[in-house]
Amino acid sequence: MTGWLFGRPGIALALHYLDRHAGDPATVQRGRALLLADLAQSYSDGPGTQFHVSRTDRRDERYLAAGTAGIAFVAAGFLAANPTADDDPLRVAYERCLATLRTPLLPVLPALLNGLAGLGLVLSDLATLTGAADLRAHAVRTGKALFTYAVPRDGAIAFLGAGNRFTADLAEGAAGILLFLSQIRDEQPDALFTLDAAHRRGLPPATGRRHHRNRGGRPADRTTKGAPP
Image (cartoon, rainbow, N blue to C red; front, side, top):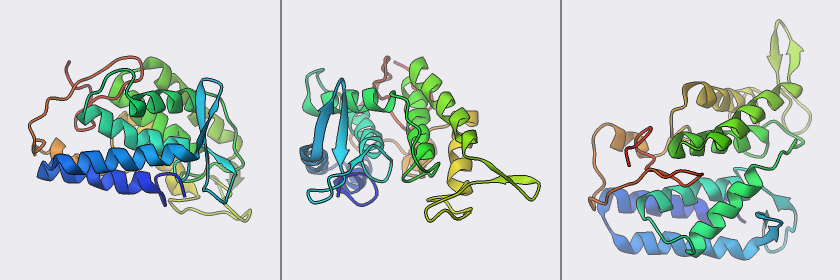
């Protein structure tokens, strides 16, 4: 399967943090190889990129769990820690993923893993890291669109998950939507609880590489908000 939850990008993200903490360049190359292998399930969609769920499941996905959003989230970390040329295959794929995420979409579910909230959370996270105003605008637009799914219930609002049932869980329900909305409000990186918090507490990358803030949708270091040039 493609994507962050069940596919190669989730393993690549673990390898990325092994390199950050242990300083093993081999893990970077292994992680890049996994991300590039996932591109075998992708196809061009105008300026963007779409992903099939797997070799046998040909549904098109762009969500956090499977598809474009999750791959963009992981690729951003690799590119921040390991700057590349503009024509690097992973950078090209990342830019094309961003083009897809910028395209308006109203999915069936508002969910974090397989719905609108996950798309918005990745847009918001990358906007915070890169300083890209257009990504921030797309994230805010996505947050506003979530309220088309809200259902008044017992003096509050609720959201339907899979199976047309109300749920408050992280994957499909209100908790995941609240996580995204708080990310928009607070503009803090790392809403998905990776190991970046350890670096924010003062643990430097093991290799001593310098990280850069870039404009126009290119990722900066996830470890700080508004990292200096």
